[in-house]
Image (tube, rainbow, N blue to C red; front, side):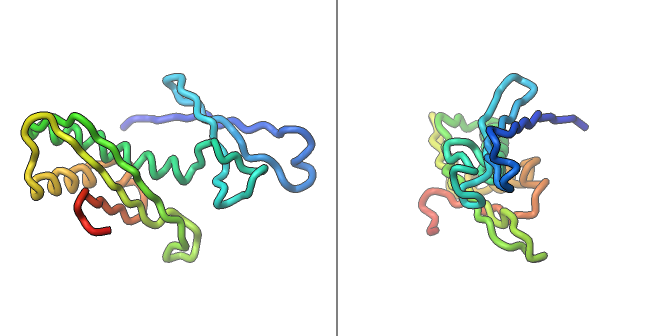
Length: 156
């Protein structure tokens, strides 16, 4: 077992909260010292109450799924003798009503693009490495959303 922490801090700005509306910009602090400016999504709350430049929780969840998948992929590819030289993913998350009728991130689509130094796995091996990465991903194992991996050349 391991414990993972984050400190979230929001503070009222000006006199907006008594009006029933308030800004949602806040700060995420992590134990290693990283700080991330966060806000409600502009899809949930229009500016000026949301801050478009800040990370919102929904996109952070999508990034966490993608990052976890990538880290496992790099490890499994290495164990199979492949040297990954570049890995990028433009991940997408869809928010919709779930089976209980509540809004949720219901689907995450990973679009990994992997480049190798030296030998390149065949298509079946690459698919198997992604499936193994998905099964091992702590974040994917923690959520109910459908997670789909679409490799380059697959139809959307």
